[in-house]
Length: 281
Image (cartoon, rainbow, N blue to C red; front, side, top):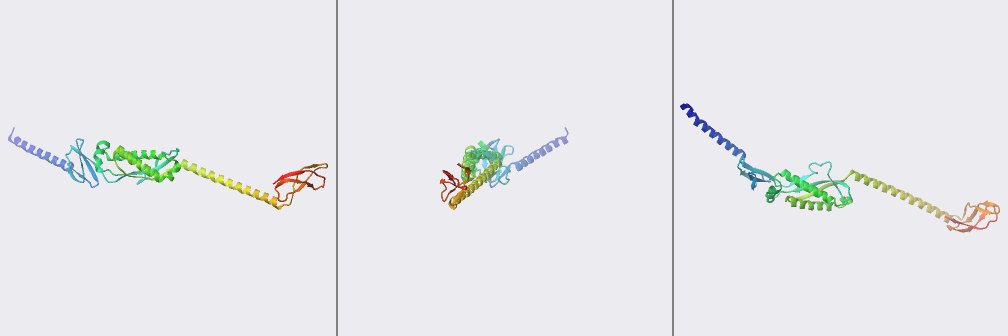
């Protein structure tokens, strides 16, 4: 081997060494540091095992050995009402088997003291954690609505919201080890079938009341007419079949102020008549 070839080997080795050093520096510069925001906490893992939880600031990690998982600790909101109002709310049934639709909003805050337990036992993905919170809240909401009658939904709205909040808070704390700040039910509506049934019942009630009033007025008029006949007429000609020796004729009797009774007849032909007739007004 010539002297020229021997001199090139150390030169190439030196440049390869420089390249490796530069590569390591770049890896450390781009992946060896991580920043934690003011409203965040970051879980640091080493080969997948939890190594610590870090607060706001600049921190170092070993590239390709350690990884980070960030969680927001400010209050979060899960809702089917805002910012996007779903067309159909959460469908559930009351105790009397009527369908209602509700919109639910859950507020929660992830406390740093709970993060280690949640990461180790519940979920390592913040989005998955939010999905699980929503699932528990919706299931609990449906259970609570299933305990009330349809007519109580509007009458006892405040009591229902308190009950749902208490049950959702307890269920999420028990299952996910996380504290719920508040639960709101902005809106509950009845199904179209229920609304149509209520309208039909209301219309039927109005018709019944109208018919009842008409009958009351008619009976009152008839009673007034009968009173006027009994009190204002001295003689009333009543067509009755009266049998005597000369056949049938029309008899008349005095009513006066009496409404009923037995009266002697007189007839228009002055035929001899005997007997009486009972007349009622």
